[in-house]
Length: 158
Image (cartoon, rainbow, N blue to C red; front, side):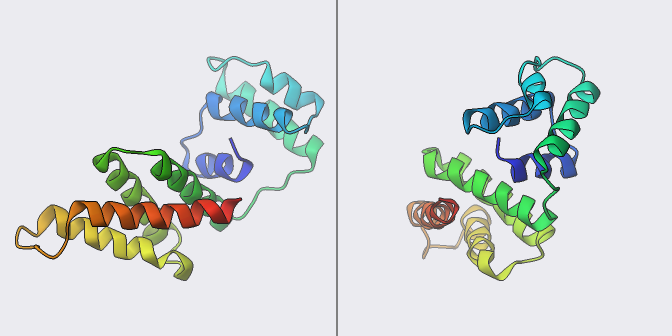
């Protein structure tokens, strides 16, 4: 798990022991190490969350990692969701992931200008789902637009 994404989960109160342990694996795989990080990576997904958090905080100090801004964390969440969209084939799953991105953009980032297309996509999805007289849109075109925007976000992350 990427550091900013992990901090997003922490800030939202949805972090799990699995998230912390997977984060430690990712750092170790990339050649980043510290004593507490090694201990954290040896923990079980079933270990006590408070104990895991203790090793996480020690790892942050040992590696001199500072907590990122909430905006950086939210953008990491958006990129994570965009990657899932790129890989997804199911229309409903793609729409749900796009809605999750929209919620981060509209609620948590307060309509950040560079993410405006997701607001437009949300409106298109709503028209498809709720406007029975809508004949100018088709699901395939909306899914194509969602996938294209997701690819753009995904490419910015590389």
